[in-house]
Picture: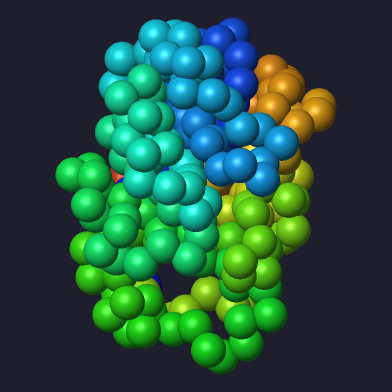
Length: 233
């Protein structure tokens, strides 16, 4: 997908501590993901999610992530976390994903997909999706495993925004943004000391590397690069 110049959105996923949520907001992260998938080591209960939601900074989106949760589980999580966006990584179809009255992203595992995944098929299968999360895991497995997404496997005909996930860290996100030009990037294990426990230094470095990639892209495509809105230079 050829995109106009814009700032790459940053989402930190799998947060479990209020202090990490507050730091994410201070670093300028666009979204924070709270995981309710039963199989995830970063899973939070709806009650714990309420306290995390209260720690969110203004203008930071709350994303509730599910993987084959039941309807009642999703509704309970929504009631406590008050998300602005939902994210589904299981076998949920479009009808299920949109029944909760909130915009949603659909997670797609690209590992082992071969040529079976293309933008046209995804858009037809999930016509009401706000966008897609393209992850490095095998389809049907939970995300957050740190398996690096294959940039070459990203469908070339994506017309909706896509978020790049899977194995991202401060050491490789610059190259990933430059190569894939995603709408956003999603990181979990790449900014952690252990599952669910974020590392402040790694969080800061990750954001800095994304902004550095944005600044270079702007410099290459703008006649006036005296000021970069992405990183403030």
